[in-house]
Amino acid sequence: MLEIAHLGEELVKDCHSLSLVVIGVNNRTMPLELFERFVISEDAIPKALADVHARRNISEALVLSTCNRTEVYVYAEKFHGAYQDVRDFLAETAGLAPEEFNDYLYAHYEDEAIQHLFSVTCGLDSAIVGENEVVHQIKIAWELAREEDSCGPVVNSAFRRALEVGKKVRTETSISKNTLAIGQACIEMAKRHLDDFKNQEILVVGAGEIGEGIAKALSELQAEHIYFANRNFDRAEELADLVNGQSIPFEEIEKTLERVDVLISSTAASSVVLSQSQLIKIMNIRNGRKLLIVDIAVPRDVDPAVAQIENVTLLDIDALWSFHSQTSLTGKEAEIGKAKTIIIEEISRFLEQQSARKVAPLISEFREGAEEIRQIELKRFEARLAGFTDEQRDIIEALTQGILGKILHDPTISLNEAAGSPRGERLADALRELFNL
Image 1 (cartoon, rainbow, N blue to C red):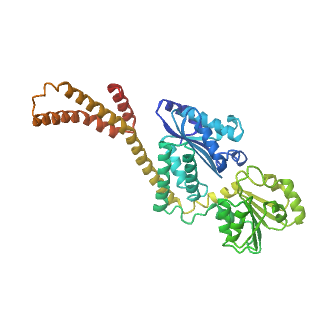
Image 2 (image 1 turned 60 degrees about the vertical axis):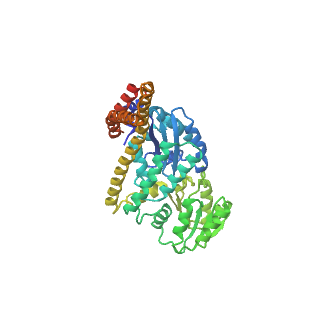
Image 3 (image 1 turned 180 degrees about the horizontal axis):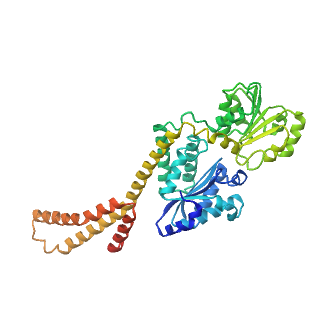
């Protein structure tokens, strides 16, 4: 994989034709307090797409932003120019100078970009290996890019194939078998900090996709009472109905925290929902009763300083990834190997198909040009052929077509066989120059 440390070496690629590039950050490449500044909400994606797509060196763009990665996929003429454009976009998104996060960026180019995309889609690059939520996230990101008309044939073909590969890996391997969804993983981590969920009162804040997953995971437990709060009260009611719980107005979160044992938060808020000062007041009212807070939102819903309050245990998304990163690998080594083999095979097949598509118009133009010359020459001798019979004309037509076919055969075969290789690039360039194509 391409690392930023080798960026200088990669600049030689600037002289190449248009290529797929992915540049991004994730929760493993930088601290959470820095990473959460790069997260882009789904509502903000259209504006982000327009911003990236309008940059000078970028022809197509797609933005993928989840709780553990923000990546920008672009189709660009020059790697270095695209890298600078995306880096500047990320700097503006996070409100940081590029030098404040440069060391945390990763970038992949051409086949390495395809490999990264396929691996992400298959769940190999996830903290919980084999998880399925990423497929939905990639579908949404691609759908938004198409709606905003920021992606074209290159990005579309890459993401279409990525989803096909993701499905193939999950069908032909058991990498996703018994894999916990994020909501389930969150509950499993919380259980390690509680004697039992029985007789516990729980408040779930946030009713998005992760909140729904948490609700489904809680439905299998015998908690005393489960409350749901969301800015959209109707949505909170829907989740409450799943577990025979109770929905509460968003404004009653603090009051409800005075009596519950566990808070699980996963909103899409851009700033903290609960501050340290709010929690201090709440804990004073609780008179020493312990409170477990599981905050898996990114950006975080709960001020990290809350961890300093006595009788409060605060677990965030980093704790979740740390808790499950190793356990998610256990027993899956063989399946991961199978998945990687499928990915490698699919990358090769995809690149061959893309190369063939690129060379096909050139071959077509070459053959059409040669046929045009043949027709011009036949027309030039039209007067001399006036006395020929139809049979004789057919013989001349077949003869000239046969000669032309023989001449074009070897160059066509060589171009098709070498497509996608350095030799293929040289042959294509020579053909363009020699025949003015």
